[in-house]
Image (cartoon, rainbow, N blue to C red; front, top):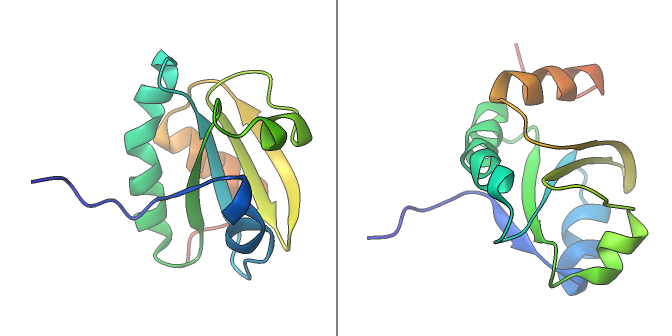
Length: 115
């Protein structure tokens, strides 16, 4: 039985509606099948979304299948995390990262956990 995940996969066609028009901040995880560090970060995405309990939406974008998004948001290294608020990319971080580092980075960029 497959493990259910809360994190949605988005592509170029669904990006606008899912990310740019979201009233909730969105963390975009850009990944690729061939990327080893992406596989380390992947399980953290569900945990982070669960921790925010509706205060943050987390989505995944597959690098190779979405070249226009990769170009538009200037993704040069993987995995890449891009934080969107009110339809705008407000922060980007590339490279492997721990859950604590993700939570600290989100807090530094104005997305704090609910008390």
